[in-house]
Each structure stands twice: as structure tokens, then as C-alpha cells.
Amino acid sequence: MSIDIPDAAELPDSTCSYRQVYNTRLARKILAEFCHERFLRPTELSPGEYVVHSDDRETEYRFRAEVLSLDSWCIDPASLRRIRRGEQLPIDSIDLLVDLSGRLGIPGDALPEYLEEFVNTATISMNRPDSRRIPAADLAVADFQTIEKTMTEGHPCLVANAGRLGFTADDIERYAPESGGRFALIWVAVLRANTDFAAVSGIDYDSLVRDELGAGTLARFDRVLTGQGLDPASYYYMPVHPWQWSAKVARIYALDIAEHRIVPLGAGPDRYQPQQSIRTAFNVSAPARHYVKTALSIVNMGFTRGMSADYMRTTPLINDWVRGRLHGDRYLASIGFELIYEVAAIGYRNTTLTALTRPGSEYRKLLSALWRESPVPRVAEHEQLTTMAALLHIDHNGIPLVGAFIEVSGLAAREWLARYLRAYLHPIVYLLYRYEFKFSPHGENLILVLEGGVPVRAILKDIGEEICIFDAPDDIPEDCRRAVTEEGDEIRNLGVLSDVFDDFLRHLAALLHESGLVTDAEFWTVVAHSIAEFQAGHPDLADRFEKWDLFVPTFPAIHMNRLQMANSRRMVNLGDSYSTLVDDEHALVNPIARHRSAITAAGKQVHAA
Image (cartoon, rainbow, N blue to C red; front, top):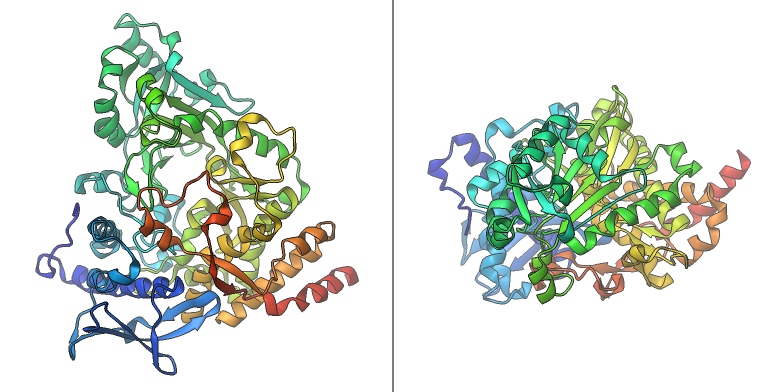
């Protein structure tokens, strides 16, 4: 495996202690998520007391748990016991995966790679230096990028969510988001004849690179080309991740480099910090400049993370079309909700490899980049930015960051939750029901704007790759049609019920419940009233609320771990229908269904006011 977890004797006392804490947390997550996805069906020994047996029936895992809404298993970590042939053993999350591997359905020859991904995931939190462990109270008032680099949980549903297969231990330290490293991007000149560049209206290539690099750096790059007898006007300048350059581009495109179709220019002037999405980098030298997202051909969380040159041609055009549709929307403006758009993209094509491969091939995803707007210019000095993933973060002392935000706010926990839902859930529902746009609004794709610890508005990112456009108008440009989906009415509400309720709010509800801040029942009552409040305020959408019912009694589950374990390098075919991902045999009980009467009550209140 690419990263070993050192023996306890090699680690400082505090690290050993934290290692066991995080080992237990990971074991708890394995049991909870695999119970949620019904890989495991624990035996209830007595009320709230459960046991899971290993495949060989020689080992028992005993624990206390509450089964909350949405089949959410809230396991008491202090209760977790591992007993083999009558002997109690320390909890070991890796051994737990091996003990259960038969029921997980991972082919024997694929299990070592899955375990490698899990070990790499575990190392993030277990071996974190003390200097990088920040108490929740301090993190609650920290700056945007300090919060970003402190996140260690990764995707809340996926167990092996930070595999980074392809990175060495040194690469992890340089380029992984939790390391908080800062690095310069490599820049290359790529022959225009082999390259697609696209931008939203109002952006052109010359002004973009001038704003991103500055006149002095552009002049330096021009001199590199003219010094080799090459014409700068025949090339585009594009950024490359340093790992991608050395591990992929410099080798696979060696002939292109030798023949000057690609010309190395050296490092750019700015320093960047990797974000949780790992391919995306934030400009810490000039925060108002764009995020830069670059191809990075490592395996991480069910995908090889290259970027398609085919997609680069259309990504800004999709963003431009969405921006045009939302321009001037009074409701979104009134709640301060914003999208940050991918304003330009560039992709290089090797003619030989392109001719030999089909769209979707990893060999078409080696050398691409895009520029996304920064959220920094959009906030006032007294406002704080944070990734929404921070709401699920628990510090090394077991303190949830969401509790610290609530403490800073001075609000009752239920009121804080209600305000958060207005900032986040309302606009996501609005985009789906008004415009028929479904996004992937999970933790790292949302940025919250806080004021005194209170979420006051939200910023959505990752538009071009994540959007699904339902019932697109006939005049939608051909270049945007890859984002159009033909799902039926019966599946559209999953854009909220699955993508929001099950993927994110389920975890937030469990965290608030076990922390004693808001019970699970109270949590979903607040959500139900929030949805009712939103619907009452938009009576013109009543027919769609009825067709795509958010108060439906049940909805089908989507099993994220099952998808990843079936194919760790492409867990979802982006060209497939959304409906192909659902498990029709696992119906989740909708936790807000019993509150349907709140729709009528809220409507009466609005009309009375």
C-alpha cells in the first residue's frame, strides 16, 4: 500500500491517543454506512444493543445504537466492542473491513486496492500532526482556507473517500488539501491548432491570462517561445498541476514536447492551496483571482480525476447559459444566493490518442484546466466563508464544529438550523422547481457565508460538471445538451430527497442528535416546516410541488459505497440516467412525510400575514 500507518511505538503519546479515537470513528462509520446501505443487517440482542458477525462467524462486533430517520445508524462509539472467540480485542477499522469483505461483495483481487484507498483515507486523521489539530472553538472563527485545510472527514457517505491512488507520501504532503501546502502551478504553451479554449460571454483569452498572470509573467513566457524561434500568437498558455506534469504529461506527451506542440514555460508567480475537491486550487497570493481546476489523474473516491478536453469546449458555455437563465432572478437576489461560474476552460488534444480513443477515455483527460470565480470578492469584511462540509467536522477532542458555530451565534440550536435551511435548502429547492436545474449540492460543493456564526447565505459551485437540466427548452444550444437529462417526474424529487436529505442532512441530523443540540425528530420537524414555508411563499409552483412531491411517503435509496466498490475507478457513468443509480428494493421512509399538514398550516399563516 502506498502509505503505512506507523506502529504505535513510533508515534508521540498524543498521536497514539488520537489514532485510536479516529480508528474507532472510522469503524463506527463503516458499520453505520454499511448498515444504512443494507450490506449489514445487525442482530438486535436487546433494545438498542446490536451485534454484527464477521464473515467467518469467529468475531463479534457489539455496539449500542439508535436507528434514526432515513435508516441512519447512530452508534455510540464508547460501546463498540470487538470480541474474537471470547477475547476482547482493540478496535481496528482495517480488520473490520477484512472481517466483513465477503458481504461487501468486493472481488478478491479488488480488495487490496480498496483497502489501500481506505488506509490512505484513515491516515489523514490518524496521523495528523498535533500542529494541524485545531479546536472547534478556534476553527469557528477561523478564515476560509484554515477551515478548508482542517477538514478530514471527506464525503460523509463514502467510507474510502480519500484514496489518492497515484500520490506518494511526499505528494500527499505537497498536494493533499489536509496538508495545507501551497504550491505554484506549472505553465505550458500549447499549440492552438491542438487546443480548445472556451469562455463565457464577456471573457476572452487575452484578458484572462493577463489578469491571472500579470504583464511581467506574460512577457517572460513570450520570451521562452521566441527564444526557441516560436511565435507566441500560435499558442495558448495554460496551467498544469505539478504532479500531473511530472507523472503524466511529461511522459505521455514527450513527443508533443519534443516537437514544440507543448512548450514548458516554468512556474507561475502565485501560490495555490488545494481544496477538498483536490483538483481545485485556491489562489492564496491573490484571493480575488480565480480558482484553478486542473486535470489530476489519480484515483480518488470512485473516479480517476482527469479532466476531459471534450468537456472543456462546452463547460463555460453551459455556465453561460445557466447564468443567463438566472440573471435578474429577484428571489435569489433577495436571499443573497449566488453561483460562482466556471468562466473559461482549456483542453489539449493529442491527435493520435484522440483518434484511438472514445469520449470518456482517461487518455483524453490528461491536459485540461478551467478557471472558476472566487467567492472572496463577494463577501463583506465582517462576513466569514466556510465550506459547508465544516458542519460535519468533529475536532480531535470530540467537539462538533457546528456546535461551536451555534455557540458563537448565540441562537437556540433550532433557530440556527432554521436559518441555515433558509440559506441552503430553499435556493436548492427553488432551482429545481423553478428552473428544473438539479445540482450536486453536497458539503464541499457549497460555500456558506456566516455572520457572527449564523449562515446568512450560500454560494454554489461546480456548475458545468454537476448540473442536470430537466425539460430543457428547444432552443438550448447544442453545446449545452450534454447537461440535459430525460428523467421522468417520479425521479426528479430525488434532487432534494436523495442529494440533500440522504447525502447530507441525514449526517447533520445524527451529529446534532448525539450532541444533544437538536433531536432527530426535532431536526426533521424543522426541515418539514422549512419546506412548507418555502412552498407557501411560491404558490405559482404548486403544480410542480404536487408532481415532484417532497412529502412523498418513501423514496428509493442510492447506495454510494455499493457503486464505488463495484467500480473504484468509475463508480458512475456520467452519461447514464440518474434513475439507473437508485436501488428500487430499498425504500427510505421520508422523515418529513408525516408533516404534510404543515403545508396547509404554513400557507394559512402566509395569507393571514
